[in-house]
Structures are given as structure tokens and as C-alpha cells.
Image (tube, rainbow, N blue to C red):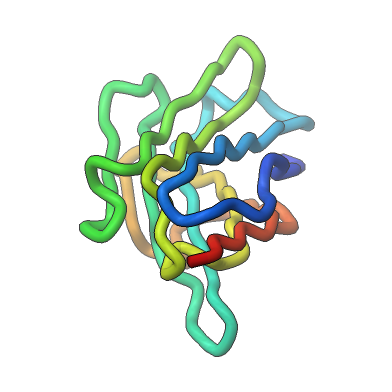
Length: 124
């Protein structure tokens, strides 16, 4: 069992930056591919970014490319999402997730463990 706890969300003006963290406990994070998803009010949870077990490969949804960076520190058992040039449409609850699968994936059902989420609000 892996327990994931997100932090770092908050209120920021458009153009600003935030760094989200996801601390894992229970098992070694290096055994899992990791991802970030987000869910805006009235919308389905959507993929944001993912990183492979060894950080060798990353994957992003088109709307965040060149603005967001996903990275991990396996020694600290922590996943991060650096978000720059934030836009009001980035407003959502952000969730981190862990996948046992070897292949990097955007599919929600491929992720085995989820955090409780952290709210990000970007004002215009």
C-alpha cells in the first residue's frame, strides 16, 4: 500500500508560479511511475504529466507543455510539479498518483494509488 499526500496548492495570480509536492509513504516511490492529474469543477479528472520510475522519461498534456515540469526525488520519496506561467484555466484540484505498470501512461485506470488532492486557484 502506498499513501500519497499532496501539498503546495494555493491562490496565485495569472502568470505566477507554484510548486506542488507529493510525499509518499508505505513503499518506495522508485517502484512506481508517477503522475499528476487535475479536476476542475464540473469536469472529469484529466491527465497533466507523468514521469517514469528512473526519471528518464516524462509525458505532458499539450496544454501544460513548456510551462509545467514534473520531477521526482526518489531518495526523498517525493514527487513534484513545478507550474510556471499559470493561467486561470489551470484552476483545479491536483492529484498525484502512482502506477505499478512499467510503461508510462496517461490513463487514469492504470494508476493504483491516489492522493487526496490539493487546490490550485489562478486568478485573472
